[in-house]
Length: 560
Ligand code: NOJ
Image (cartoon, rainbow, N blue to C red; front, side, top):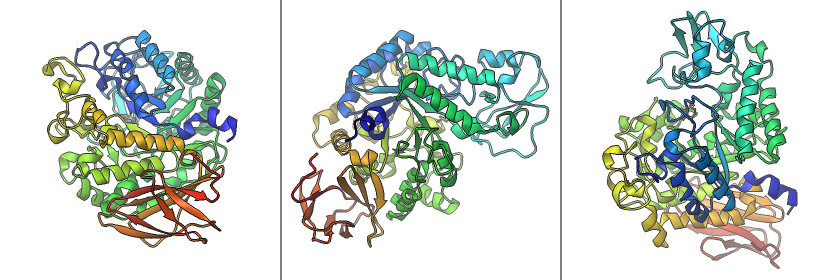
């Protein structure tokens, strides 16, 4: 093992956990989660095996986009506590071996941010160029990101008679990163949070941030937006040494590589990690079809990239489960399988559900998917509550359906808060996926629970550096419903097989490169599968079955 690799590049085998302080744990019982509550739950995250906590926006906000509309980049929303409480969380997490990162939302501000208030007060305001203005809204305009609320990406400011750009809601004016003063402010913001102990950022809306076409002065105002991203990464590196930029880049494969740096990502000097939106969307298509081919193709199509860059794998995030990169027909297949009702769909492109209700609570399918998450090449990212199989509340509007309070026990408000239910900021999930049936306390005691299953997956993932670091390939075999993939790193070799079909299968697998006495040791159940001298194995799989297999060459040299 190379010493430099494992320490500095911690993100390569991290287990990331995303939460919103507001919905995680309410310690002062006012119906809103807070940092004090989170501080009391850090040991829970440590017990799960989390190594990196991603905090969704906690900054002062009018809260019209769940905190992604910020009025002060240097503060903490007073409903959640104060700066001291946040620093306590960072300190406690660090003590338990957990790094903390936070959302960096620099594509836009709230329209209540003092910069925007000043900018719109007059065309000569020193803050005018902090935002993007035009005399006319362009005739050719991209489709708004939130088509249920917006019809354009430009809004007329009555007082000054010009239009400002807003890629998201009209109350989120876009910052003008072509303005060097804005870039200085962004660096200062990053610097403050890094100084307080953050280990990096989840960078919101990266392609929009770098898309300077709409900007006053045209693209020539910031001729090379990727040079700007490079400079952010370099700045982060100078300040922290090992900080991470985990970017939200939901683009087609051929455009993603650029955001790692270099045409094929080979420079590795921009984003440290990117979420794999393409694999995520094709995972659902594969589930809908009971055919692993779409996911296998998505994985094969990943750009090569730089060895130090990393893909972040996820099953669910806090937004709509977007299916925008599938074809219309494919999206309809997923809608039909997992969200046929219109109340389960949003923006014409996504689902508002969590996985367990989508598969009718079938534990075999849920477990197969999380087994897959922890074996896919890259770094797994969990959204809070996934580890216990939480569901959604479809009575809540759009994306809010999956942002319900964490379910700690079967008691009042799911143990999230002792506030009167009428004071709860966000209602809990009702019915079969509500706290009575799905909660941490019960699952902690049950050795067969999803929580304990996921804990064991985390342990195996962390004990098998191949998943985070390894050279990856999809193995050829004859069963369309099965994904068989292999990861090799530093002399170690693991093979994961996942059956997307409800029917049992017998997988006949040839493992390239085996020459001599070897076997496959099942990491999950301890069983041993024989290999012929030329590397052939017969691997039985139950319906929705999965196996994590370590290749052991005899005499055994690799032990984990
Ligand atoms: C992406 C975030 O994930 C989403 O929740 C938010 O609404 C938009 N960016 C705007 O900040």
